[in-house]
Image 1 (tube, helix red, strand yellow):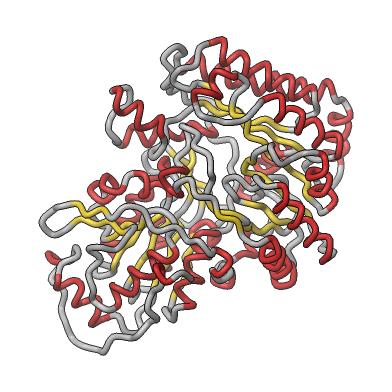
Image 2: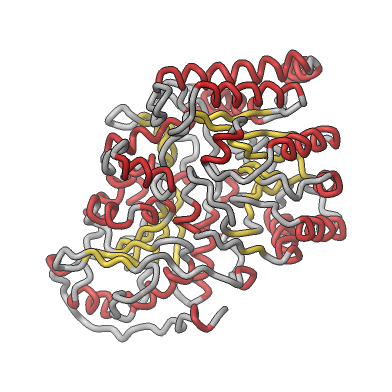
Amino acid sequence: MNADTHVEPHQRPPPASYVLDTEDRHVGDAFLAFAAAKGEGRRIALVRPFSVLSKTTYSAAILPPLGLAYLASVVRNAGYPVDIVDAQGEDIFNIRRSSCGRYNLQGLDAEGLVQMIDPDALIVGVSLMFSQEWLPQREFIKQVRKKLPHCVIVVGGEHPTALPEYVLRDCPEIDFLVSGEAELTFLELVYRIYHGKDAQGSPGVSFIQKNDAFVGNGLSNRITHIDELPRPAWDLCKVENYFQPNWAMGIGMGRHMPILATRGCPYQCTFCSNPTMWTTRYNMRDPTDVADEIQYLVNEYNVNNIDFFDLTAIIKKDWTLAFCNELKRRKLDITWQLPSGTRSEALDHETLTALYDTGCRLITYAPESGSEKTLERIKKKLKLPRLTESIRMAKQIGHNVKINLIIGFPDERVADVLKTTWYSVKMAFHGVDDCNIATFSPYPGSELYERLRTEGNLPAPNDDYFVSLLVQFDFFKGDSYCQHIGGRALSLCRLLVYMLFYSTAYLVHPRRILRLVRSLTRSTFKPANVLEQRLYDLYARNKRRAPV
């Protein structure tokens, strides 16, 4: 690792006796002295809370905690005792309505999750990825503080990175907040806590001082040599609980595991919070190192499918071909998928063929809109004709293809939405298997979020705002931030696009109907696209939850 990101190795503090004054808990001298005195032998608990969904959500993928597995591995390699407490993996079929009636919660409940945290833990790190999950997860953090009054609570992830001061003030039970790429920043913070040092000048760390002043040290330094990070600590997770066909991010093909080949994204789409979380620096791992990790997952966990969680997995053709050559050389009997969206510039016939020949079976393209004007406004730097041609080639080669679209951007007019609708239908004619159509939501950290706040078209963060973000998988929520189209009209249009796309996709390609009928009549249902996967998800989960 670079010298500027070097963190001293762990040295256990000497035992001592000190009683913490709870009034001094937040970053005061007494608190730091207590941490140093009580640090010896005490563990670090890294927690992923239960997932939070709208009460009318039709389906959602549940995935192993890749971020926490990386974090745990780095901390453990430095000599600190660490545990991963994963609410979703611990109780994956526990789907229940929240007490307020607004949400469905999935995974171990807050009380059970708190009970799983080592009561002698010195540091409890909580992963907070999505802003729409904030309210129930905030209440979980309050329960952690109540049960473990003297632990140090640290949060990180997309949500706190976007709103650091708000999160700290809205939940004063939190001691420290880590912004951006967390591994080395969290490791340095752990060192400081164990040794009773303050975090006043630590890049990436924010907190509220005893005098109520907010200290924000900006984003964490980006990690340049990501190949040098240790492999994710999957041995600390119950990964076997995820090896079920109804939890896949893409299409269920067996024993899935996630991987990252790159970090960050060099683009600046105005609706995305990536520039706030990652900046626009894009780091790629060596393709041989990525293939080594896949080989390890196959050998260690008998994995037969790899899901790439990258923000933008494929940008450079040379890298992609080198990676495919590594997979060919190893003759791995696997499939792999790109379920989270990628660019089309490098996906020409040669690249698409190489992907297919090495087992790639799902490519998700992210055009976002069928309107050239909208693409220009949101800084989505792509050419629709080039992307369309790449999709046609992918289908000819045999790939399963999904596209992601969004309607209701602030400046869109009805004509722009109709162009996106027509584009989805055209893609159905071209053989695209799936289309996810979302209505625009202003996520914290995005350029459009800041613009709407500045213009007075979006209130300061509050509980109602976070509830409104649950629209992603909910056809019944009608919030609109579009100047020219109301929420109800957007919801109806969204439903119409879904109906038009899938009716066209199945009627123009009738063999898909026959395939679906044959699959339904077999004892083992095998989804052939993401829609069928989600319907199977819903069936399998309801069947598992039904009373005997």
